Length: 251
Ligand SMILES: [Zn+2]
Image (tube, rainbow, N blue to C red; front, side):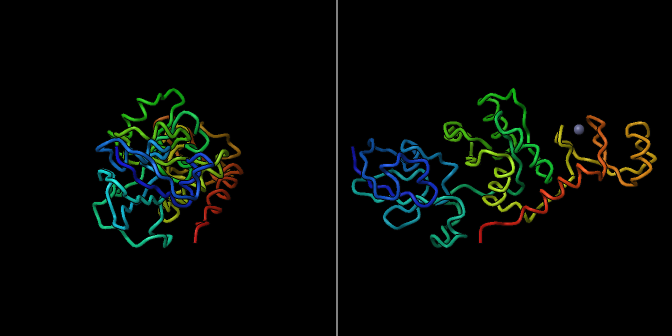
């Protein structure tokens, strides 16, 4: 056994029991325990950690802990929020070139809103944890969940623990954390199928929309999977308000 001291910063404290929040926590660690092993044993999934300092030096998840080590653990965005200087490349996971998601079975509302903003999001309320893990590993998707045990699975490299309970607040939370506002492509994906929408004219939609709608609108989008047609009606305008409200709330 060795003894190491841990300090978790900012919102990582939410994962700790109240007696350990905001203070140094000295713990016995199994021989040859890695930083990742101990951080997760204390309740924080590895996906929620951006950087680790051991005795003031940047360290990777696989760093083996030694007697007397002091481990500081930082949340996503810690570098851009000025909580610590940039850590060397390769110290933690590589960022994804394209951000795509797989949402767990409890986050259907969030999945629909992400599709609305143009982010490819797989969701099925029949997914179990194993399927989500497989999809995330195979397709390099970010796992969205409120289940921290799911995020501790080793093959899930990218994940996001969603704190908010309501879909619109969840959307804002995910946008802030992953800085999604810069790559918005609203109304580009089918809300039902997650398939790309294709622009079509009134002449192409035929009987699929009511005549009154066909007369009032020129621009339509269709999904080639479910064949639904979307147009800029009142529902669209309400969704536009959601998209327009997605400004970064973090300085
Ligand atoms: Zn569709």
